[in-house]
Amino acid sequence: MQRGAWRSNTGFLLAAIGSAVGLGNIWRFSYLAYKNGGGSFLIPYAIALFSVGIPIMILEFAIGHKMRSSAPRAMGRVHREWEWLGWWPVIFVGFGIALYYVVVIGWFGLYMMYSARAMFGGDLPWAGNPEVFFQQTFLNLSDAPFELGSVQPAILGATAFFWFAMWFICLRQVDKGVERACRVFMPLLVILTTTLVIWGLTLDGAREGVRQYLTPDWTKLGEVQVWRDAFGQIFFSLSIGFGIMIAYASYLPEKTNLVRNAMITACVNCAYSVFAGLAVFSALGFMAHKKGVGIDEVAAAGPGLCFVVYPEIIASLPALNGLFGFLFFLTLVLAGVTSAISIIEAFTSAVIDKFHWGRPAVVSTTCIVGFLGSSMFTTGAGLLWLDIVDHFLNNYGLIVVGLLECLLIVWYYRIEKLHFHLSDASEGGYSRAWDMTWEWCIKFVAPMVLVVILCWSVYEDFRTPYGGYPVQALLVLGMGWLMGTFLVSGIFSTFSKEPIGDGE
Ligand code: TRP
Image 1 (cartoon, helix red, strand yellow):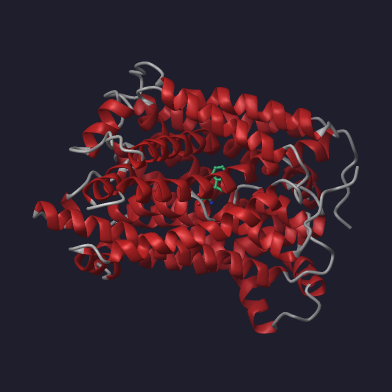
Image 2 (cartoon, rainbow, N blue to C red; image 1 turned 90 degrees about the vertical axis):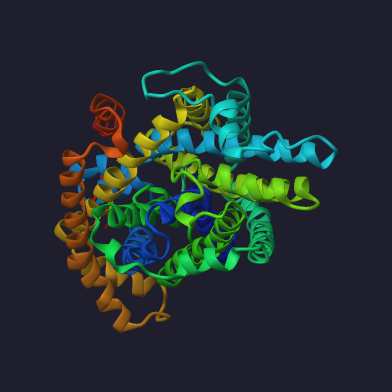
């Protein structure tokens, strides 16, 4: 069967950046930065980017491009016993991370609708107290993970709508679906974000917020929480360890500068996060100024941060609140959709590569199952489930996948071979000095750093249960999700329809 292909390198870059830049850059990055003290988060974040993020992104591009396949078949070609390492991430991302991710897109979509209504003279529903509105009226948040409460119909509807939109985009081959969507959405995103940052910086108190954001607090660097959040965030934000970048690189033409593409994707993504952080911290500074309290006291740190901070400023703007709110939430929705479609693409191409089923059937089944899974996060306990599942899948799932990818290539494939492929594909547009650094990172730096982070994280989780949740909930939702998807990936990789060569 003919594999899809990107129409141009720019199209590929837009799609890779479209996958990387998502809710993670604004919603997740900002609550992690806030939780970990602002400036002190940026140091581990930068270390994670250079020691692990960029090298692994190059590695994933190289694997996908060399093997011309989606993650499972590519891993299977590296070593036939390791095909599961390709299935596991696409399954736990597609049927784990994506499930709550789409629900969060739905929340933003609803906030966008509320703002639109305010543009035409209605009231903003959160006026008065955004935090109370978000937690009580909007989410109907319950007290414990197993007190589900009832499904929130509006959220369920929004979630269904976004699964439908993604189904519609992914039904087509990459150049007509994903590529076209990203070409339109990504430039729009840049314009909207810039507007918001400029607007945020002019608010009273913004300067204090930005100062807190950009001043490092060295004492925090001794806490494991800061480090694992930074590494987890780098994986999440760059979409590495997802199997996505492997699939995307497989649609590239034979000659292409993979290293440059990886550098551009990673740098644009992180610059975008840091840039968008300016808006969030300006907003926090504004709230602190208004309430007369410290920046660390203005809002509850956690996945609800964006839904409290932004509505608060939007409501207190002198004019055009509806319009600004609408633009902001639209930005997030677009950023989220271009990311979420990337996992559907990665999972779909994996299934098509292996079972040769038709694209429409695979995409439709994925979206229906995805929607059913997502609906579990639309109950009153949804936010709590999200927090737990997110912690385990990112801080363990993605990091283990990244670590194993490095080890697998170094042990079974010889990194030199992949290396040769990189320079061959980029036809000399490639420097030797960078080359050696990369090899060294994949062989030593990344594996060592990741092992330390993992061990430290396990130790910490045993000492104090994550987020103060009951241990049972952590075991069932967190470990259960990791183990369950692991088993399914094992089952998927046992069906072998074609002999797998070694990629030669
Ligand atoms: N990198 C994205 C972000 O920062 C996250 C992401 C990419 C994602 N692809 C995804 C999340 C697929 C869920 C499903 O937001």
